[in-house]
Length: 451
Ligand SMILES: Cc1cc2nc3c(=O)[nH]c(=O)nc-3n(C[C@H](O)[C@H](O)[C@H](O)COP(=O)(O)OP(=O)(O)OC[C@H]3O[C@@H](n4cnc5c(N)ncnc54)[C@H](O)[C@@H]3O)c2cc1C
Image (cartoon, rainbow, N blue to C red; front, side):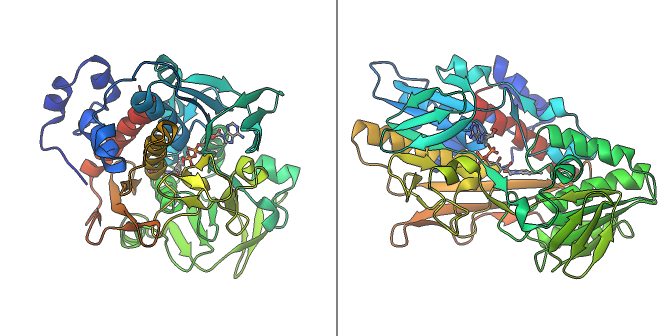
């Protein structure tokens, strides 16, 4: 992790206009340093320098499906580095809503507005934004079809649609009443606000039960962060309430020692953690759940369902690993099932020790954008990309911890592998890391959305 020793005040003064506005007021990090470091990590030397969009006749059309962490970043960097590429971004939502920090909304420490950002600046860079639902990709005709019948031709497509769920694997979870009542809030948006309302309405002395599916799932530390933050809310406002964490996995999936410490030091008597306990059945009428070793009745039942790549990649026949995830060629992020279609982020079958994170989706995007520019020019792609991941988790409303890794492309094994000795884990939670986590979010939103 890179930390600036300069004070927040000095850092803000050193930035100009909109850059300063993009920083959290307590941020000790320089946005430009982080952006250029992230870009430099991901691509070949001739491509970076944070130069603005080039000009000239079009060298190709790229359609990007999904304006989240992967897709929006790819759209931006295709314009920044490629300039004369026609980029169309298809996104169903009108605004970007961030999963990172969304657990703070659920616990009442932030509002939806704090995790919502506009797409307008991408349009300012020349990205054509189309609001709509992509329903099909035809790799032969090189066309994307939208739900309203429109078609978009491409030379190369990028797909970064995130995850969808397989509620059918849990009896009762796919019923209309369960859809209404048993929330996942694992895609930031209306469910985030609705889960917050359920927790607010819960009586003191009630039980909030959170179920975690078998890995892999989006954001390995996310469920445990959510448990901590809801428990933090309870200890202040509903001290007789309990958080029951029912994990299908044998142990905490990320930052284990730090979460165990938080559970013991801050939430003894509030959080109860039960591993090896997979959810099998729910009854939405009674808010009850059957698991491998427990029958549970909760006031708020928050089920994170089993996951897979989102519908659009499955319908396009790209999900060729376990019928769930997309295999990719890591040098270009091109799907192994279909040339010309590059898949990013959570939808991919991960390289070893590569979590499904927003930070890595952003890095995948830079690898793909750089490669696509080279491919459209008929030039070789960078043969040795390096990407990094840093993930912060709050263990109280103010204190956070981080984990970080560096991943280098391994030519022999044709995948990214963790660089030995790289990265690290916090030794302890701190308020400083809590402030850095907010700065991380501001920085990555700025990098992703050009704000
Ligand atoms: C509670 C929680 C906390 C998290 N905290 C962190 C964190 O601290 N740090 C971190 O790095 N990561 C974190 N993550 C993980 C992070 O959110 C994901 O890894 C990241 O969003 C993946 O990026 P993506 O581009 O693959 O998908 P997304 O960011 O989900 O983007 C997918 C986009 O595609 C759109 N879309 C999908 N299908 C279509 C379609 N057919 N047509 C049009 N649009 C479509 C969606 O609307 C969405 O906007 C967290 C996740 C959760 C749930």
